[in-house]
Image 1 (tube, rainbow, N blue to C red):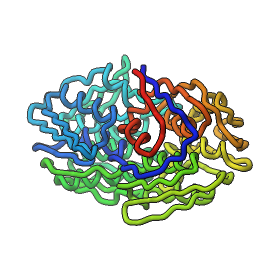
Image 2 (cartoon, rainbow, N blue to C red):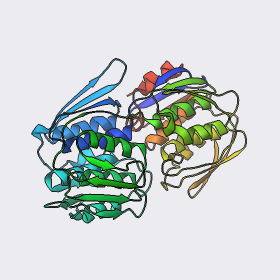
Image 3 (spheres, helix red, strand yellow):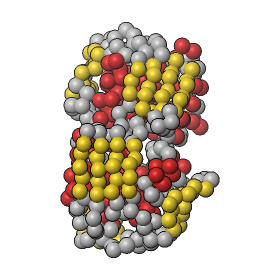
Image 4 (cartoon, rainbow, N blue to C red):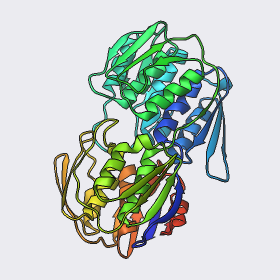
Length: 421
């Protein structure tokens, strides 16, 4: 177990560079198994989920090399020449949700897949029924037994698949499986998230034929083989949003670099509404906050709506706002676990089902708290930075899953943060 010790009350000031998008990296990494040659991924985030996936690929016989530049940008090279379709070990896959992308990849490449049910953060019921529906439509036999998902398909064939609910994971998994299938696959009611587009860009660079990514209808024309290629992972807008929210909560002035501003539109809109001054210049967003934030209402929605992954840090900012805010979580039913921990720091939040009613307070105070999941941990970091006194956050290894070099980046902005293992 690791913990952060944060002495709060200091406005964040300076520049921070955002790393590669976590959710893109963990989708593109397994996709490299579909290629016959070497793939190089640039702008790779230095996070635990990436390291876990690298271990999985290495365990399957791939030659995986990771390099980190002085700037912090990472590069990974994956050579699948030694790939062997072994069963994926449970002790590794339980550490991250995105392990289920191996199902689509192994089905496409080997005609069979055996992967443990995925792990990841406990933020509510996260069924994979839409994934399995897609695989079956492509011609696979799928069963779940003894905690394993087993899928077999002598040959995958293109099909029309309508997703009953918008699912990022199912959209990506079906894309992966359909890339080498015979014929054309059409995914309707597909997810539009930027990392869906990023995966499609990697696949197309490797020789796939994917059209419509970023819309609700995606068409994949199967090809016989993919080649290795070089691809740069898009910036992580959730990391960017977290630093912007932290700057607002501490009434600071921060330039967030290496962003795609369009991806942050819903977050920027709510921060503007809360009273932040935000300027855009190229791939840089500058946030300045003078005085106490204003109360706003937030409802999480699939992209391009307000992202569920930014909801927990945003809840912290609104707990300091003047007035009453209402946050509605429409994606996951258990994404208010951080509220009990925030109450230790002096917040006034009442949760009713999927809605949090937040009465803003003038200040927070430091306290011992525990991260319950990745984004809850990020929310506690934001709260600790804004609070008076010292806060100890345990379970910080959960934050390491999705945020790179937290200590270095925060202290570079003038925070007082230490880490104890």
